[in-house]
Image (cartoon, rainbow, N blue to C red; front, side):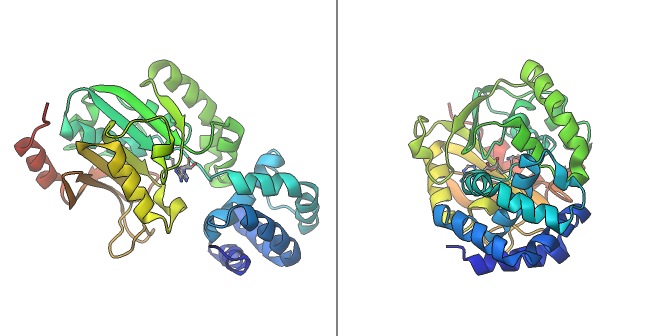
Length: 328
Ligand SMILES: C[S@@+](CC[C@H](N)C(=O)[O-])C[C@H]1O[C@@H](n2cnc3c(N)ncnc32)[C@H](O)[C@@H]1O
């Protein structure tokens, strides 16, 4: 359960720590309007007690940018913020109680493509949990990863088109392009402009995707069957469901076939239950039969994936796949 005090403290923290200047400025202004911040936060937490303090802080920024057609891309005077908090209060509470921060970075899926290439199994059902609008999943088996510098040893695995017979994306929120655009912070405005064009192109030329509304802690509540997936992919999702680790693992195991793989892409966990930005962004791959054996197959300096190289367990993973090919 998140407290109002924790959210106020997080907003204060982000007013110094956030990298993007207009966003940092926004958090500074919001921290200065503590009575309004406290009021809105109390209303949101009544409806959504488990949202994390950091997630909610960013939802305030995203929701206000969404409601004002991106006015908060620039530094906005305090009086304007004060007025918007009053004017949009009901919509702000509604959005922050029901929506999720959601960026969909196509280059992250180059890491999925690489692991699928090493697996090289026939007739794959791939389920992407926390798929956002499904853009990354649609980019499988296309030439969409041109922005990333790829390790030459990984290149053939990424270029190899794999046999995906079903690509299913699960996310709690329905696709909303304007919300999706608002989730890009000002420093990534370029991606915002490209979003619609990329979506249209991949819809036409990419891997066909079936989107399902659902929650990672309750996959059984969707119409998917137990043991559906050869591969479950999660990227940059677990930090949004902090504190629900056992529910996440139960759902993913339920969804996987007996010899299926879970690939979780995020900052390396090390001794922490969820990822931190001090570490590289890696694909942590495990088989349902050998759950405690985790292979880091790829590694990138950050989750923007400007470059992708072999992970520290790439060779061992390759040998393990060669020694135990797919059953059936
Ligand atoms: C940061 S985005 C990452 C999207 C995509 N996987 C990528 O890497 O580009 C996180 C996504 O997880 C979704 N999400 C948040 N909580 C979730 C939950 N409980 N179950 C499933 N998806 C969730 C959000 O709606 C959002 O689309």
